[in-house]
Amino acid sequence: MALRLALRVGRRITGVLATLLAASFVIFAAVYAAPGDPAVFLAGGRDKLTPERLAQVRAEYHLDEPLFVQYGRWLWDCVHLDLGRSFKYSDQVADLVAARFPTTLQLVLYATVLFVVLGVGAGILAAVKRSTWVDSAVVGVTTLAASVPSFVAAIALVSFFGVRLGWFPVTGSGTGFLDTVRHLTLPALSLALGALALVSRVTRQAMVDAAASDHVEAARASGVPERDIVRRHVLRNALGPIVTMCGLVMAGMLAGTVVVETAFGLSGIGSLLVGAINTHDFPVAQAVLLLMVTGYIVVTTLVDAVHPLLDPRVEGAAR
Amino acid sequence: MTAILNEATAPASAPALAAVRARRPLGVLVAGTLLALVVIAAACAPLLAPYAPDTIDLSSSLVGTGRDHLLGTDSSGQDLLSRALYGARSSLVAPLALLAVAGVLGVSLGVLAAWRGGWVDVLVSRLTDVMYAFPGLLFTVLIIAVFGAGMTTSVLALGLAFTPTVAKYTRSLALSEARKPYVDAYRVQGMGGLRICATHVVPNLARAILGYLVVLFGEALMSLATLSYLGFGAQPPSSDWGLMVQEGQAAIVQGAMLPALVPGTAIALVVVCFNVVGVWAADRLGRQ
Image 1 (cartoon, rainbow over the protein chains, first blue to last red):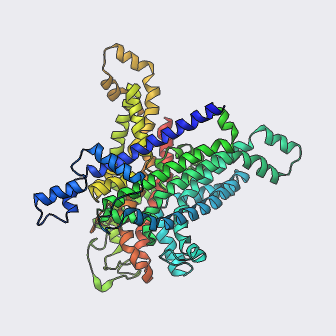
Image 2 (image 1 turned 135 degrees about the vertical axis):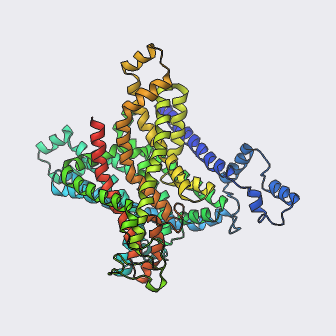
Image 3 (image 1 turned 90 degrees about the vertical axis):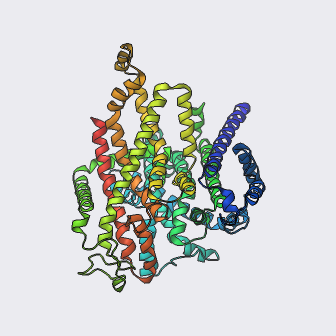
């Protein structure tokens, strides 16, 4: 038993590392293959550029070595949190990212709270009131919300709640807890809206499946109140797929911050990435992409690992 | 909105399919009519638009709705209705180009993986896994970071990003198709694998794959609009809807909502209509 568990964990970790390695290589190789000579850029432009200076820059940044050696060096530095220097700010990339990461994390966590509460709530409501107008309303409204790109949702929310009603600030991320919550409400809502359809559908389906099992019928026959049936028998058994989906959606939101942070002028790592691409600041773009992909892979793996804990039947099926 | 590129979303669409199917007649009719109107408007933009899309008139900057400008103007005094009409062209054609790229690449890879099996299949699925490791638009963003912003780069990059989804779907269809007796019959007659695939397997799967691509259209349009909004896609002076939202955003704080809301509503409307019609069409294409 213990051996089998260790084997499974080992295989899982190997798989994750392999994916991470491949993804990081894609990120590195893409920039390596980019048109234009980075040495020219690093030396400060094409004018008054001597071949000696170019060779010096190449040697300094190890640009004269083969692809795999450069990749190995880059990866080794990344693992040691040395992400290089920004072309644009000439700061350490690690410092830039560290300064901006809290805003992104707050935004993702806030959006997660919103979509879990609203999405799972709507899904439970739709399942309990199955085949009524409530059910169709939930499906209709959430499907509509999923058809609106997050930047359009952001614009609409800002226009109405920010400018017209003046309830929320239009830009910035605020200081202190309450102020931050106030500043991040509209961004988090724009991020969460698109996820509601997916989360509520999965919740509804999982609840409907769980409600069809025999033990629910047995509980109902023995006179357990409907409220308890929904909570203890149906929802408890539906929790596996719901938590999995919520985790996957949350992981995907790291990428969604690129759009929402730009729309609201928040200085997180999403807007840092957009700025880095527009100014050809490759070290920053590479670092943010690597961070986002790593975060995504780690969170999705954790979600996968948690599933059997919530629902022991899955573990049995996996064997 | 970014989630459709992840395999996890695939099973979730079943209840939605059922829901849309249930209220098919009226919803599909309304959405279809609206879409047809948008397509006609885009095609006849030069006839319908009251102004050229790039006529700058600083004296009528940020005018609200009125007789001169039905939907108002933006901060450079450009007529929003005219810009939105012309913008419909690139906003509707670009997703088609994207899906064509993803369709050709995805179907080729999917059929190849299913037909050859073995290490080719493993290789294709490993490549797919690596692309799935990039959530949302990040793979596209990486390509744009390297090759620079622009509509062509965006269409090609998104086409590549949509390829694994199409390949995966095609592979699952082609696996069962390749096991059918007629394939063996052709092989016995001495027909080559490539010829069997190109003249028989792919045409037999065409309807189902087309239906799948139709469903992806809304996602394709949203992704392209998002890239244009970020400044990675269409470049000025284009009046692509995503770009129009970006340019109109600054006026919101001045109290002028129309420059951003007109193109934003256009995007949302077309995507909603296309999702309603697309699911219905995919259902019909898949069934026959």
